[in-house]
Image (cartoon, rainbow, N blue to C red):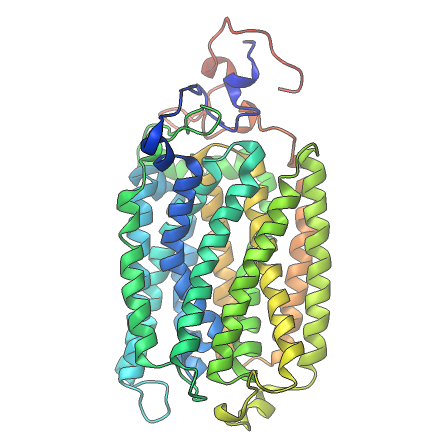
Amino acid sequence: MATVNEKDIGSDDGSGSAHPEYTERPKGFRGFYSHPSVQVAMLGLVCFMCPGLFNSLSGIGGGGQENEVTGANTNVALYSTFAIMAFFAGSVNNVLGSRLTLQLGSLGYCLYIAGFLSLNLHPGADGSGTKAAKSFCIATGAILGLCAGLLWTAQGSIMLAYPTEQTKARYIAIFWVIFNLGGVVGSAVAFGQNFHTKAGSVNNGTYIVFLVLTLVGATIPMFMVDPKKMIRTDGTRVSIARHSGWKVEVWGLWVALRTDPMIVLLFPMFFASNWFYTWQFNEYNGVLFNIRTRSLDSMLYWSSQIVGSLIMATVLDKKNVSRRTRAFTGWGITMVMVMVCHGWAYHYQKSYTRESIAAIAATDRIDFSDKQYVGKIFLYIFFGILDAMWQTSVYWMMGAMSNDPKKLAYFTGFYKSIQSAGAAGSWRADAVLVPFMNMLAATWALCAAGLLFALPMIYLRVKDHTELEDETIARLGEHGEILPVEEIVPHGNVEQKDGV
């Protein structure tokens, strides 16, 4: 068997490449602009303008509408198509490249916001829009699902492939902070535009501002550096395998599952990761508060995500601590947060039902000036922190399993597909008026189960360094066969190091 050193397989450098190239990074402005952290920050800006503003509308509840049924059905359409597209989006990403995939994916968000604007322009007798406006809104949700599958797969591939192994949580935090600032800014715009009203829907100006910003965000991928030219901070190039054709790329989905089956243990976490939004957004924020307070709550929710992501970055990238220890520590902190937040939520949920809320006019619901607001907004803030901890942990766990951008594209596709299937089920349950308490109980159970299933994966699969033996997709041949390490690494290298 060939002998290799650490650089040959990227065990510590994070390359995950079969033949990593060590190159001196460019100097001056070019070096700054092509720095991995700057590119991940630009990626964050794309998501700031597009999914971030989508999140601000979702966080307000009902897409900013008084009648939440159309918004819920739009999300059912969105996450149904999202689940299908995301499963195959890794193959699309590997064929088209991450930049083009990101660009195509960002365009759907503009159309989605236009759908809700149409509801405001054609409100209908019950405030939920005319039949044509509702149909258009639901159709935009279905189209966005296809686009979002592309965007989030490209995003995950870039975000997890550009950093070294020691800085993955830090780069996830950089992205998460910028991305969630989109939700903060969007909610701040909605709060400012609706400050003097206690009506049930946001005004047209809010949707128009969001529409313009998403169009700006869709142009950013054109200015990002080609991943083929990316050099990490340690001098290793990002491994971009040549395109092997659609048949091999789709075959790679099966190879990724078959050769790394531990990813299946993360599927319950994937499923829960968007399920909990329905209760938080529609069945807590969307029903208890008036529109200006919902906008303020959304701003605080997405602001708190910054705190959660920074906490997990500190824990998961802590120096002088083994990666396995960091993984177990992050898992423990997240489990504690799940129990605290949902126990707290249960205390409030006992006091209201769908029937009791329906008897309260939208203008008479809780305002931020009311005394009872304080405790309830702190729960929403804690849910925002938990969300960031959850999502950061999931991304980090996938990043701990591979450094290969092609394999990470498959993993991210699995993540977004299963996540979206969960979201589609949750939003549909809301649309058919499942009792609030049942929704909370399901949310709590899924979160706890997701973490319990992930525990054996951490124990059995997370190692201190990723090895070439783990990178089956990087060793995938032109005809779909997995090449042995001896054929990938040339003979005659220096002796193998311990633990590599």
